Amino acid sequence: GEGGAGALLFLSGRDFAELGRLEGGMNERLGTTLLGSGGRLFVGAPGTGGTPGSVLLMEGLGETGRWSADAPGDGFGTALALRSDGLLAVGAPGTGDGAGAVYRLDPAAAGGPSLLATGDQDGAGLGSALAAGPGGRLLAGAPGYRPEAAPRLARAAHTGLPGPAGAVVLLDAKGKVLARVEGKPGERLGSALAPVGGQGAGVFLAGAPGASPDGLPGAGGAYLLNAEARALSFIPGDVEGGRLGSEVLPGPDIDGDGMSAVVLVGKMADGAPVTRILEFGAESTQADGGGGGNAAGGSDSRCFIATAAWGSPQAPYVALLRQFRDRYLLTHAPGRAMVEAYYRWSPPLANWIADHEAARAVVRLALWPVVGAAWLALSHPILALILLTGLFVMTGWWWRRRRTPAAAPWNA
Figure 1 (tube, rainbow, N blue to C red):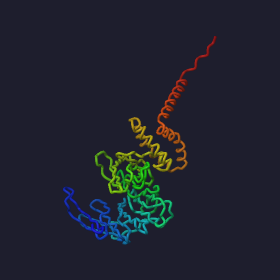
Figure 2: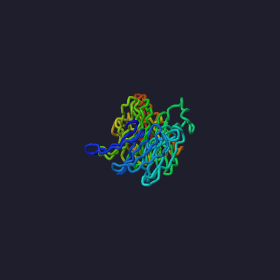
Figure 3: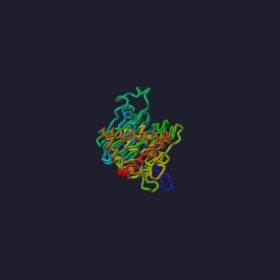
Figure 4: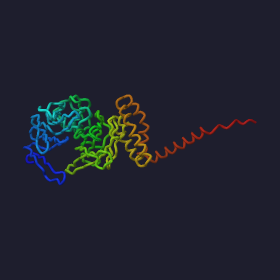
């Protein structure tokens, strides 16, 4: 709308005829975010140009409620999430010099919003994205967070520093920080959040549009997180400058195969969209750490035990093992069966390993021969084949010699 007013259009599901329209006010940005629940529709109008943000409640074609924190430029309404306890969480990433904040409100009560959590660093943008977890918990994105910066660092001091790493913060029902997962410099982790595999699965995708996987600057991607905000795997973008993960849109089971769809959206510098559709089923999104997605046209980034051992799905040795899997195991039926079996039994073990530093060290040590063999197979396949053939020959010779009975002594 004019002056960034925005508008809300109601269309018929039969022929898309316009049933009604609600125009926003000057700089209101009405309709920036939408969240439906039963017969209710929550509408975000985060504002721009110093206009305080607000959230509207629509029932039918009429407005039945409106809330605001009344802080100029706070971005109240940028993100919305309906918690499992029935309270609405509202992101306000412009609060406090861009540190950001998350509010909660009871749509059934007469009171206004109450502050749930605030960002601890100017420019972090806490509340830029929200996703409701089990037990009233909430995941909140802070894509401007910089781990290397001191708390409350003024944005003017950011000159010369790498781009924000971003973070996702796990909050309990009272706003206490339970966990924080941080991105790498420039990734802007937490730009978008969405549950996958159903609202109660306890697994989430967190967009990282600034990531540069596999040497592709700005290709972006998304982290798969469990209910404890632990990174399970990384889904990389494959288009340079595509900024995949700028938006994460949950969807239904679009093809009737029992797996819910999620759309990762990016945008090139010229405005051209980049999209990738992922599917997640109940077996691939267990809250105990089983996670993963089947990304059409991309490499599946699940490698649970190695990720737990090295602490990141993008660690170089984890990436090397994924390359070995893609080239030598997923290209034939026995290899695919072995990989699928690994996906079934490894997540609980990986969760346990990740929680015990001593176990991580032992697993890293045990994986070094595997990493070395994978590197040899990828870098020098002919030499690896010769060595493997020699190993089989020597093993066969030793086994045959071991099973051959010793000759009886000759007596003259």
